[in-house]
Amino acid sequence: MALKRRTKISPNFSMASMTDVIFLLLIFFMITSTVVSPNAIKVLLPQGKQQTSAKPLSRVVIDKDLNYFVAFGNEKEQAIALEQLTSYLQDYAQREPEMFVALYADETVPYREIVKVLNIANENHYKMVLATRPPERNK
Image 1 (tube, rainbow, N blue to C red):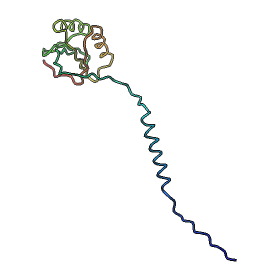
Image 2 (spheres, rainbow, N blue to C red; image 1 turned 120 degrees about the vertical axis):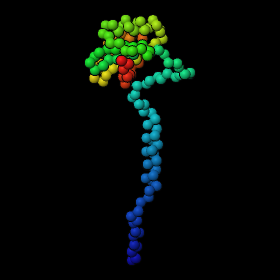
Image 3 (cartoon, rainbow, N blue to C red; image 1 turned 120 degrees about the horizontal axis):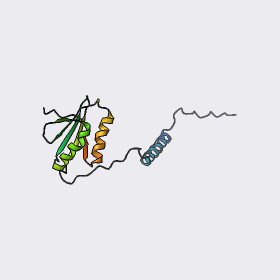
Image 4 (cartoon, helix red, strand yellow; image 1 turned 60 degrees about the horizontal axis):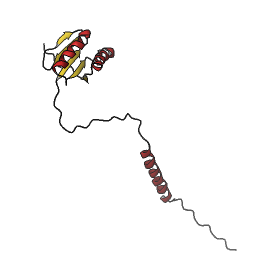
């Protein structure tokens, strides 16, 4: 009786099925990544159609010792008390109704002091700009 030899089993395997699986995973992740929306704040940025002219600027400066200084345009800064700030800004607003106020505060100034100035500007409907670097003093 003749015995047949068994065929040899090859130790190789086909990569074709592996590439199919990777391709399907790639398609799956591409589709699901477009469905996911980021949890970010939506900000509507203004679009300018023309170049704006520089508006008159009044400055409020708070130094590290909580001293307040105000100035309009290129005028010299004056030291004032916080209670006088409203009257000074009203005088400046009468001179130039389209002015805006730039607030310069030292980095050591507590936020409550900055908020006090912001509240004064909000109550009087002034346009505020929070500046990052204090201007050079005109003394």
